Image (cartoon, rainbow, N blue to C red; front, side):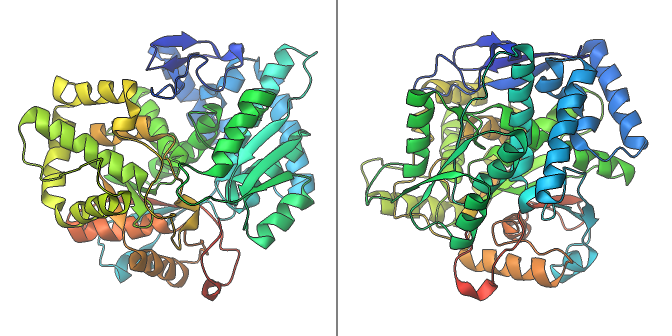
Length: 501
């Protein structure tokens, strides 16, 4: 069995569940509280042994990330090694047969030309997911979910294969489609009415059952997500989504991306000062932060890097939540923070106020963020996080200004579903969440295409736009080592309009 004991913890109701219970979300969830299952690992001596196994496999050149890092996966904890590897091998073979590639370790590239073009003198690393299965990082997340579902079925062989459900406007649905087909599962996808025609063709070619939904004016929340939730709740379909509140298991699939990155950095003798990630639903950033934190506990990362995230000016629910959290921390600590927010104000004006504050008060934001880092375990910070658990609408609610719109279309989620864990990790690390203007997203996309050999879409390179903003604000020093993530392949002509992710 596994070297490590793994449990699923809900911070809101303070309960632990075993992975073999087959849960994807907290069974006691309430809409006004933040019930999100989080994988917790007990380390002691087992952590040292798992660390040594990971290092040995890595040093031997093993190429399958789900084999290299299996000791920290719940699906492996449910089975013996042979059983887990049998399931993994079967799915990987099917992926190679159906899609032309299985999951393999992806490149970490030192982007010297890009760094020179933007005046950064430190090492700038890019984790390139554009060549991964389905052309983005999303399939990697859902491979974690598929392995968990398959491990549960191995424990109960008489159990029929469940129907799977996903909501998405593109890459997540496509990632779910290729992984579900490799596992032999029926998949239903809830997509926007105007889903990109090319994405729709690829989904239908993989036997996905599509349900198109129109966005209604003034409606609260994404209609695709709301329909997905109803299907999971009323039909008993399994959540096969990249949202950790609905499906915790996708997070550990995403963690393999970060584990690869930190092992590649170790090979180059580099400990990065900062990680910069684009955020929509938040699963990627949550996965990366979780993996680096776990690696630190296992003695594999000497210093937890600062976690920085960015969202487009056309829709930034997480940055809004982050700024509100800082305002409450500042109030508790008696610090200056000039953000004024009135829930009674028109949502469009209210969001414009948040964007203006984020753009013009960098110094105040930086000071309170540094206070939160240094005093993370005190009541001033923990009290705000505790209040957020039991009153999530104080910080996070669906985007209620005009319909979100950006060139980086794939990170325009109405809600950052993994916001709570991500907020906690950003505050602890001393990082920041920033709003990026559309012109900077376009500039980052152009730089990514012209100054690297990679070809990411506008969403996939949006973290670079965040880095440019942080560089301008002085939050990242020009000599510091920084890691970015190019997460999706460019599938369409750059002049044809908004990128559909």
